[in-house]
Image 1 (cartoon, rainbow, N blue to C red):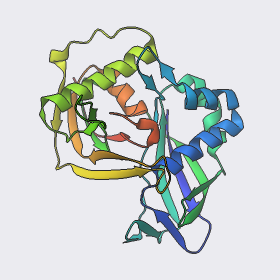
Image 2: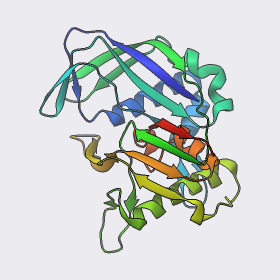
Image 3: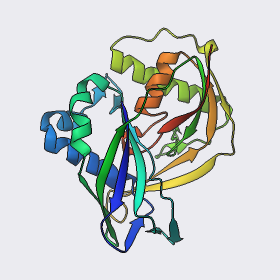
Image 4: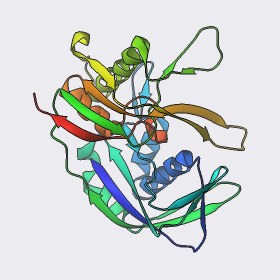
Length: 260
């Protein structure tokens, strides 16, 4: 299921760190934990796991802020209300409590320099798109695809171009499918295609900024047309495309639906 949250700022002056993805992820875990500690603990510590991969299978968008000003690594929020989307794949296991779970909840997004207090005014359940085997999406948060190089200590975050990127993009979807449905996917790679429709914009996101655990993740926002089994496209829509979804990467919306 996917939900739209309408948040209101509480204070008069609201300065938000531009790297707020980790803080939102922490808030989501905290809110779920207050309602269902067992589910939150499993989601945080384990998720969906096989021998080598682990997926949390939820994602969320960037904040949609109508009016703002940027000053260095800070955003001054001028709007009273902002929006975000949060999406979970296992709809049946969460549907009964998510709407009530987030309603009237407080979000505190803070780092060592600034803090913004939000309250959830409304939560709307979003209608499921009509999924088909060929669809167009637009990223609402950066899409991250990485490649491990044996000669490099850190992963290489790939630009959205070339066959390696497309191969890893599909591989990520198939691995999520295998873990969630607990069976090996039987999809033909020849039926997959990925076309980038807009100029990708690079975003370097700092996680746990100014701490010993600080790390940087690069993702790209862009519009794309993808051809694949509709089961995979549904999974990508709800769980996120690419990597690091539970950290706020890979949340996308349907731009154009193509019936097949």
